[in-house]
Amino acid sequence: MKKYEIVATSIRRQIVENKLSPGEKLPSETELCQSFGFSRNAIRQALKNLAAEGWVESVHGVGTFCRARAPLSRLTKNIAFVAYYASSYVFPEVIRGCDHVLYKNRFQLVLNQSEYDLAKEHDILLSLRERKVDGIIIAPIYNGKDSSNSDLLEKLQAEGIAIVLCDNTFLDRRFSFVAMDDLAGGTLAADYLWEKGHRKIGVFFQDDYLVKIRRMEAVCACLDRKGAPIPNKWIVPFRGHGPAGNAMATAQLFFNRSADPPTAFVCSSDEDALQLIQAAEKQHLSVPADLSVISFDNSSVAQLQRVSLTSVDHPGFSMGELLTNIVLDKIYHPELNLLTRTLIRPTIVERDSVAQL
Image (tube, rainbow, N blue to C red; front, side, top):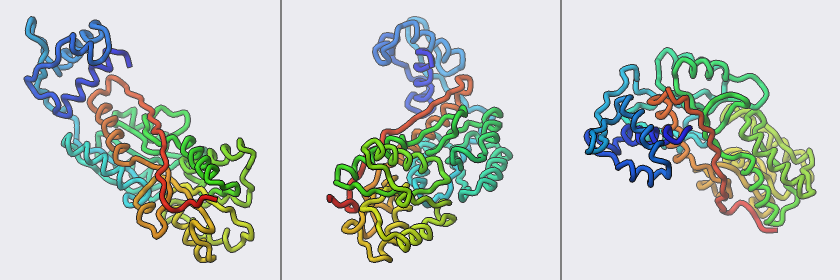
C-alpha cells in the first residue's frame, strides 16, 4: 500500500474496533507525522480520503474528528471458519483467537468441519455462499499438486466475500494467508536433533497435506546439507488427517518390519507423534531412552502426554486474531483490494521427548 493508504487503514481499524469514538478528536497532523514517520502530504491525503468516505470530519482551525458511521447495510455480520476438525490439530486455539476478535467487533463465528474431505469442503463453501457470509477463513485441503477448491474460492472472492487462508496456501494464487514458516520450522527441528547428537534421524509425516510435506522436505534438505541424508527406509509417509488417517497403522507396520530404527524421528504434528510413540511402545521402545521424538504445533497433546513432547511452536491464538483482523479489513475496505501474505517465524519448546546422545 501507499503511505497514505497505510495511515487511512490504521485509522479506520481504530474506528471499527471502537478505539476512536464518535466525536473524538484525532491526533494533529504533526502528531500523525511523528507517529507514522510519513510526510505531511501523506497524512493530509489519508485524512482527505477518510473524510470523503464518511469516517472523519475536519473542522477548519480546530482539528479532525471521528464521525459516527452506521454499519454497511449489506453485512450479515457472519464470518465462517472452515477447519478439518474443530477439536484437533492447531484449530482449537486458532478458532479461539478468531472468536476473540469477532466478539469485540460484534460479528458471529460460523464454524464448519471439512473432515479433510475435498467434496465436503466444496459443499460447505457453496452453502456459505448461499448464507451470504461476509468472510471465510479456511484451512484449505491441498497437497501442492492434486485438485483443490481454489477455483471456487476465487469465484467467491470475486463475488465480494473476503477470503483468508489459514496455515496452508495455494501455489500461484492471489489469496491472503497467515501461516507458519514451515521450511524454517523443519530446518529448526533437524538442527535441534543434530545438536543433541543424533545422526540416525527419520521422518514420520502426512504426505497429502502441503504444510506437513514442506516441513519434512526441509528436514531432509537440512540433513542432506550436513552430509547425512535420510535413508528411504526411515522416510515414513502416511495419508489422511485425524480419525480419517492411517498414521497408527503405518507406524505399527514400520516398527514391526524395522530391525534398525533411527534414534530419533521428526513428526509432522503432535498428534502424528502420539501415534508414532504408541506404536513404538508396543515394540517395547521407550521415549526418549530408545527413541527421541520432536514434533510440530505445541498443541495440548504435546503437554498432556506421559512423555511431554519437544515441539515447534504454533501460536494458534495470535494467528486467529491476525486472520480475523485481515478479514475485517477486507470487509470494511474492499476498495483497497488488500493482499497480505504472512509467515510466522518458528521457535522450539523443549520438553522431555528428546535425549542427548
